[in-house]
Structure formats: structure tokens, C-alpha cells
Image (cartoon, rainbow, N blue to C red; front, side, top):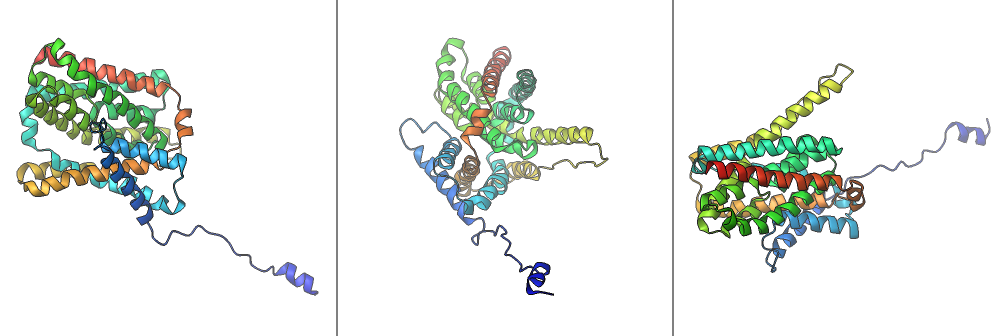
Length: 350
């Protein structure tokens, strides 16, 4: 046997390249997301930006960074951790901003208006999304963001919808644009519509997208409207839990109908939503010291901003453009529907 034959039978092993996790794990991505979130919160101090949620600013900065500079490969693990694990933890903490007593302040009529508005808006948006040919996942994200609580609802809903990151960014953009229009437009309509303090506050709380936008719009009509609108909005946020769980159930049922191999997919259980409900209950029976509460609220906002920054760091503008204008039309129609439907209910009940 010649040396050539030996070599051909026993080739020298070549090194195989495998992706090696970064030694620092999730820290580079978390630090990057935290820096963007901090920058977004700092930008709110500039004139004209104070009315915008830091979550909105964070995702915009993240998108800009990703598309102009590029998200480093070493940051990938931390970005994923921020937009999944940190997001769920932040949504759980949202439960400490609401109590059963606050819901009671809205009254049975107010709660009925909020529930009816949310349900009708979600159903209208999903129906129109099918008519317009918008993807189911993106439609559900726009429906949740419009009917519940803006960007927070979008990212929470995506834990069961599992749409691409570009869909999340598009839905957040929709609720940002139209929620901002409502934030500036509602105060101009309070007088002509003849709404009282509570009526205007309920209208704002039941229909404007983001919490920050509700606060800005409601308090422009006085302290009474501002306080009632804020409580109405927080009551609406509480409905995030049943909506996300219902969507998870429906997604599982659709998967079972499509399955041809007999495998029964399990329902994605959003345990963080149950944690949210649990903290609402805790906050209702235990008085949390004001000093601790004042630390929890900004911490929750910061964690949500980190999650949205991470979403931005995963979003390609080219893929957003590929979605076309139909989802934007859907978001606009959903905005008009929730504003008009809730106003009708408020004017006939308050």
C-alpha cells in the first residue's frame, strides 16, 4: 500500500467551525438594550418629546441603530433575552400599578364601556384585516395594540401570536402614530362634544392607545379628567390577561385543525400574564409603601423600554417596507373605529 493510498483511506481531519457562544453571554446585548432604553428616557426631557412613551423612542432608536450601524453578533443573545425574558418580567410588574379599588372607581358603567369598546375594536380590526389581506399575526398585533394598551399589548400578544419582529415593529409604529394623533386631537374636541370631566376622561382612557398618551390627553382637560382617564386606562390594561390567553387558545386550536400527523400541539401558556393578575391581587390587599412604588413604576417602564429596544435591534427596515401600506390602512381604520365607538357609548351612558 503506497503512502498516497494510506492518505486517501485515512484523510487528515479538518477543523470544523461551530458557532461558539460569546463568553460574556447575554451581557453585551443587555447593556446595548439598556443604553438605548436610557437614551430614549433621556430624550423625553427635550421639548416636544415629553408626551411620547420611552418605549416608543427606544424601539425607534433600536431600529435606527440596527439599520445604520448593525447589531453586533456578540449582542444577539442579550437582545433575545431582553425581548423575551425581561419583557415577561416587566409585564408581571405592571400588575403593581393597578388595584381592584381603582377598577371600582370607574364604576360598572365605565367598566362596561371599556370592555365593550375593547371587544368590538378587536373583532372589527381582525375582520377588516382579513378583508384587506393583512397577515393574521400582524392583524392581531394591531388589534391588540389599538384595543388594549399600545406597545405593551403588542409585545405581550406576540408571545402567543409569534409573528416576525418586523410585524411587531410595524404594529408599534401604527399605535404610535395614531395614538399620538389622538393625544393632540382629543383635547380640542372635549368642548365641542360637550363631554363632562368624567365623560372625557373615560373616552380618553377607553380609546387612546398608550398610557402616556392617555395621561397627556386627559390632564389637558383638567385634573378630574386626568385622574379618571388614567384609572380607566389602567382598568383597560388589566384586560390584557384574558385577551392574551384567549389568543393562545385560538392559536392552539388552529394548529390542531391543521395538524395531519395526529400530534396535538399544546396551548402556549403565558405564565407571565397569570403573574400580572396575581400582582394585581397582591396590590389590592397589601399596601405597598409609596417609596417602593415610586421605584417600581420607573423600573417597569425601563424594562419595557429595554424589550422594545431589543425589538428594534432585530428589525430590518427593508422588511417593514415589504409589508406595504395595507397594515397602515388597517391601523388607521382601527383608530377611527375605537374613537367613534367609545365616544358613542360614553355619550349615551354618561
